[in-house]
Length: 270
Image (cartoon, rainbow, N blue to C red; front, side, top):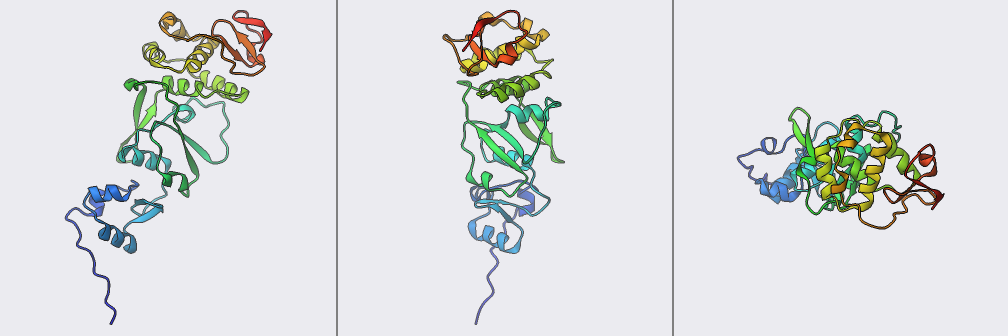
């Protein structure tokens, strides 16, 4: 005679009390919060828990937003923050840029993300950038923004850091064009924070490009930077192949961006 499965003993703290709506967790998190494997399996069978990808679970509810995923990663101990173009777009820097297709969310951090992140059935994609710009993070360069009715604090790069992150990734002419458009909104960057970032940054190309773009746009805050305190390394950097060579920052930039400039460029192109 078949017997019905015995319901595991439910812990004193219920799943609803321990697992907020929208939070994605793994079995290790559940075990740490008192939910052992038999109980987790029971919750999955009963529908109290649902699997969003292999090894990742949440309570059933509204569609999973990218903010849920990012905060979940933070809660699981990953150091990633929203950075680069995504941080700038979400802070109002992308007025002139068209955004089409699947939403791309760019995260920056040293930790490899769990495999389930890339397997989510969602209208967005999370991309991790692992470029290490600093030996130690500049704490003031990452801020938080509240999300949802719980006011979950999502970690964001400040505009100062996000622009430097993007500058480190410039490789082709379209990258120059995007960064140039984003710089148009960078009218109120903080010189004191910029100096901390530029002095701590070990990525020579990023620093040279950042300063070139800042000078190109003629922002008032650029004049308050102490450039002599920023190490720009030595040697030329051919960033834009076939571009114009800027003598001051020892970099090549697209020819069309050099046209109309009076100072700083050699007549020949590299």
